[in-house]
Amino acid sequence: MRVLLTGHQGYLGTVMAPRLAAAGHEVIGLDSGYFAPCVLGPEPADPEGHQVDLRDVTAEHVSGVDAVIHLAALSNDPLGSLEPELTYDINHKASVKLAQLAADAGVKRFLYASTCSVYGAAGDGLVGEDAPLRPVTPYAESKVRVEDDLVALADSDFTPVFLRNATAFGFSPRLRADIVLNNLVGHAVLSGEVRVLSDGTPWRPLVHAQDIADAFVAALEAPKEAVHCKAFNVGTEDNNLTVAQIAQHVVEAVAGSKLVITGEAGADPRSYRVDFSRIRAALPFEAQWTVKAGAVELHDAYIEHGLTRADFEQKFTRLAWLKKTGGL
Ligand SMILES: NC(=O)c1ccc[n+]([C@@H]2O[C@H](COP(=O)([O-])OP(=O)(O)OC[C@H]3O[C@@H](n4cnc5c(N)ncnc54)[C@H](O)[C@@H]3O)[C@@H](O)[C@H]2O)c1
Image (cartoon, rainbow, N blue to C red; front, top):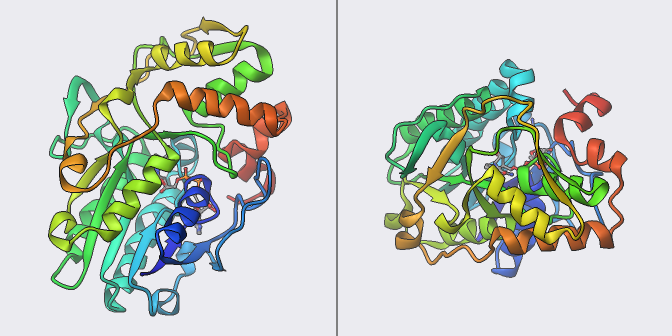
């Protein structure tokens, strides 16, 4: 298939593009390039792509493609909370416009990168896709709004699919250090401390970037009936961990590091344990990576590629980088 991959120069897109190509698909990227220079290790070989802001996308960008995989977004809570209106403009309005242009151009399938944080403060029970959505941040709210609006676009010719990813982890050449496991391993490597700012009790489902790429390929290739206008949580119950449990894996992966739970950030309302049975039943998908293995992978990559504190705090931290480069 000919696939338009938005956000191809981001953390997940840089892992997904080669995975799609390996599965035999032709990939065309689309990205503003905010994080194009934010590379750890060898420069990745990006596919051909359009360098364009999502808000300026036209019919031309979606013409002649069979499917769109839409990753491009302001991709976390700190960014979203700093500039809620910008988050809604990019993540919500521009995403819906892209989907409308795709539907009008005869694109058959639209895979949308949503998030398990749409469940918000969900407590200790497992939440499935039909659970009430209670987003607690503008970022998560923007994802809910897109899902709602894309349902309205679905018809016999246009299949939106909502992939609600758990929080990602693992090495990508375009590293993100502002997601929990990547962050904790980085701090441990650079300072010897695994520092948890909450009280460690919130639940966080995690999933490796490569597993996310596999889930998207499976959803792209599945028969329409299996995915039409459906939501899928992407991850595995084995990686539903509390922040304290995640931190413990980091202590084990980084020799000599020690755990410090400061609790200084106070209570964190974002806590959810997720049921991933629907995606396993509907698609040939099973997450492969454990958090333990991911912590070791990250440790080894940080050492091999010589991660520095300056880069960890700025180049690989989305909000800090956008502030430095004037991207917002
Ligand atoms: N990484 C995670 O833990 C995670 C979890 C759940 C969902 N998601 C979703 O997956 C997607 C990708 O996340 P990521 O971790 O790769 O984030 P990222 O920040 O690394 O990548 C996002 C990409 O989108 C591009 N982008 C942002 N605004 C744009 C705009 N206005 N026009 C064009 N391009 C723009 C950026 O340049 C970047 O390359 C996002 O939609 C995110 O919400 C990520």
